[in-house]
Length: 103
Picture 1 (cartoon, rainbow, N blue to C red):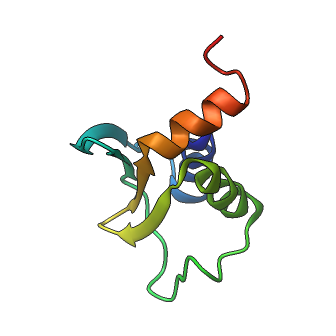
Picture 2: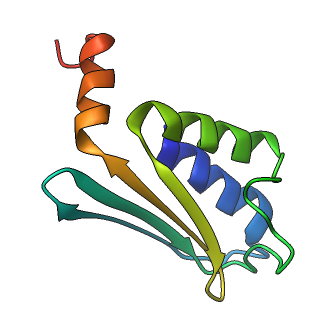
């Protein structure tokens, strides 16, 4: 769901015309954390962008989806938007088990 929302934001707010790129990566950081990154080639968030004050519905959804998995969200402008989420695997597994997602 996090990927769906971040992709939707890239397409909705960033791309002018048809020539955008979205790069998604998932990397194991250590035994208990993964780094999910979504970067695009859009115009990126403005310099005034503050994730704690961002209120568009899509951004609120992304922040809400990060909480149950112990996610730490960071957004920056690298010639496009770069959204990074560090996910705590233990917390994510507990959340999945609580909702019977593996059965």
